[in-house]
Image 1 (cartoon, rainbow, N blue to C red):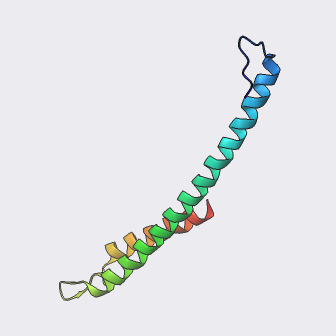
Image 2 (image 1 turned 90 degrees about the horizontal axis):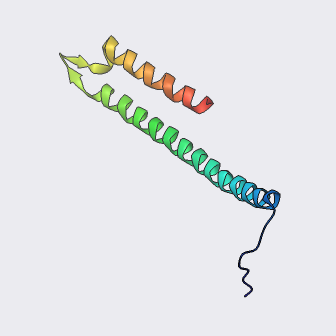
Length: 88
């Protein structure tokens, strides 16, 4: 092992090393962001499918709540947001 004490390193060399390490670190972070985004869209899709199944089964005032316009609007909004998330 070789150790140097009180050595002067040109600033250009220090910047070069730091920028290479920073670029490498940011590459790892970007990969993580992609994975988190993909998992989130998948989870949202699963929640949407569960919601659709539930509103078809649940009955209120003698009919399935899937027949109520407010519920249909909510599901349409959810589907639109999931679709937009896939494109982003």
